Length: 542
Image (cartoon, rainbow, N blue to C red):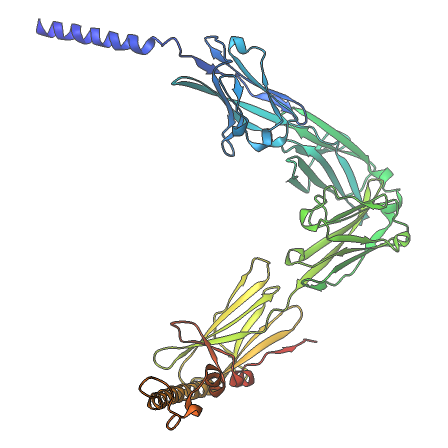
């Protein structure tokens, strides 16, 4: 009987809690969104929408639209029917509008103007009434069709053709493939994608044909989200008959050496001579886009120029009628080091020349500091900065023989290399050593010499002079005290003013100085002995 009553009571309690959990309070609701992604094209408008279930007016509720990636960003916020612009993220001000249609039926919608690639991603719609809060997420899928592909052909060299297909303004990253005249896919040689500052993609695909023929080749660029594509075709026979196909671009065959901070000169000429006024001339690094400099129809085209070259390039066109052009780049930097490609293009055919630019920098003269260790050993440190490329560092003894050391060479914030070369000199192992740093491309060297014997002699004389100075000052103080009366004034009968040393007289008596860090035995030469023992020399290799 007791068991029966216990089971009955448990069943009643369980039923009571089940009713509490399943019966919602009148103010509770759910926030639901669209079943699938919302598709929006670049440059058009998009409608972001969610709704309340069961239906109820949403005008007086607290509403928030926000993004969870890359960080929480508020698109729109309202309380009691009034917008809260102070919460809105900068990138959405003036771009989003509250859609009032359907608010009475619980519809919460935003219209976003001028869709950009950066708008692609997940969004959240949140609604609060009192202590109850509900939210849902939706996915905005942004897509954009860019330009039709352009096919550029390099003139045939020993029966081999290189075709380059380029297109820009696509989102998301497009797919590219080649087909021959029969519709068979061709294996591309390389493919390159880059996302521009506006978020749109540029694509460059290269195809190499081992046997030049008369067939037509097509390039296709496909958008995977829109399932749409654009294509272009090229007739190889026609392109081989164009003017530029029979020309070639010539330039320096040896590397161009330019010092850091100087101007760079990149010359390119057409051979045989022909006017380049109606051609597109482009200087690039590894790919056609973004470019170092672009010249079209007699003027510089800033669009698509690499950020690091904006305001630094000037095209010298004095001899453009003869096909001779020179690109001048101001203020050479370490990032400019490497190959540059000069391209002349006309009627879809281009010819190019690769120039090898080597940036060089000769740094500061080596500076040697030393620290005396326990047991009489000395730790030397040779430092210098401002070198490019990575310099060669070597310690040598008095006979010019290399001394084993382990230098550290690290790039600084400006790309120039800094050198730290330690060397442990054991007691009596060497008389003097030289730290030399050289540029491997220029053959220029800077060096400094450290004399062990003179350094110890200098240290001994410095100690003796310091001791003498202390004794002299002590004697002066004694004389000063003995030459005063009871009230502290000088006694002209016993005073010796010539023994009262000023601070200036102390330095003059010392004769040289050491710059010493507090609580350290590290010595840096700066006195007259240092100038005779540590010198910097520079020589240019032939």
